[in-house]
Length: 106
Ligand code: SF4
Image (cartoon, rainbow, N blue to C red; front, side, top):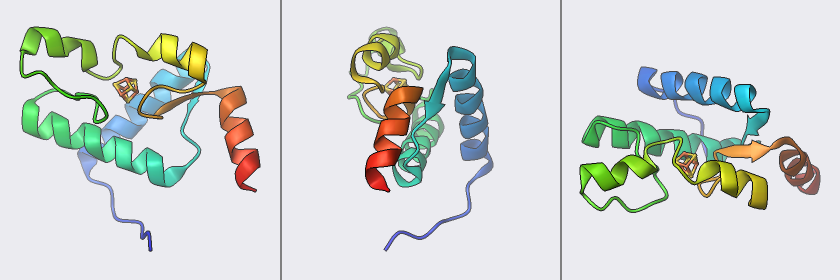
């Protein structure tokens, strides 16, 4: 069973940043709180371990220069959101996709 755990201050910071970034672009964050929390936790963990908030859903090559492409927000997210309705990690959603997904769960 999924239980809420208290968010660390790093996670809170990333969530606030992601909310702001989504708002600025006319998107929303994943309406599925469980998935959203997992992505935020992954970003926070990567930041702590590797110094950058690398995408938790993509493999780092270990080459800092190459891996800049996958620091969130990665270079792919705008195309993915436009084409699929959400980014690969399902952090950012187009509003219409988020509404459809939330409606299917009701
Ligand atoms: S796929 Fe989404 S969560 Fe992952 S880096 Fe790109 S924008 Fe961030």
